[in-house]
Every structure is written in structure tokens, then in C-alpha cells.
Length: 175
Image (cartoon, rainbow, N blue to C red):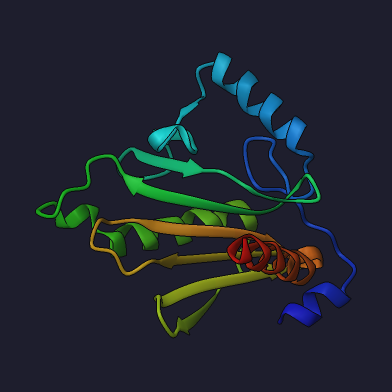
């Protein structure tokens, strides 16, 4: 699936809110700052992510926290954490399974169909779509807090980025 997507030569870089794979870090920060000034985005959990509260498109308000991974000073990966604002262990209608179903429905509307269900060895049921260079993965992380993750990855740089980051981590651990 990945090789076929890359071989197509098609580039799909759109993430959301004007953010995109390959976006320079400076542009990411400027875009988030502007959207913050407009009241659309705010500081996320522990000031280590960006928070977007989505009031439409879901049965209940959803908190979306995100912060990209940069490679060569551009976005190559964007982990996005979805959670119902009204989530609580006793609110079964706001469970992670319910949210995963809604996120999948919404992503089919936003990005077109074609998400394939897979069984991930540690995360359970997941949904994946490869559009050219962009892979979108939707999954639960196994926690009981109702969280659903979406991971956007630019497959055209994914392998190089991971190898380089692993080498940097190994070098840091030696010191």
C-alpha cells in the first residue's frame, strides 16, 4: 500500500486549518499564532501542543490537541489527539470506541473514502488510508481515557527521518 502510494507520484499534503505536510516550521508557528489571535486555536495540554475545540461535525464537542514532528525544519508528521470534552468513565456514549467511529466517519467526509481497517498488533482496530505521499492512520492507544489518535505522515520522507532521528537519539544517549 505504501509503495503503491509513493509510486503514484501524487502529492497530498493537506492536514487541516491551512496546515500541511512539508510546511516550514516558521510558517506553522505563524499560522498557529494568527489562528490563536482569531480565537480559533489556543495553547494545549501543558503548553506542549496546540488545542482546537471543534463544536461542529461531532455529536458532542471534541478537543483536538496536535503538534508536528519536524524533519529538516518542515512538518513530516502530525500526531493529533481527539477526545470528547464530555468524556468520563461513566459516559459510555462518549467512549473512545464511539469517538473512533465518529472520527472515521468525519475523515471519510473530509478526505474521501478508502480507509482500510487493519488489526494493529498493539493498538487493536485501526484505519489507514494512503493517498500518494500522505498516510492517515486512525487508532486508539489502548488507554481507557477515550482518546483517539490520528497520525498524518509524509511517506516520502518517513524512512529517512526515522533513521536520522534514531541516530540522533543514540548519540544523545551515549553522552
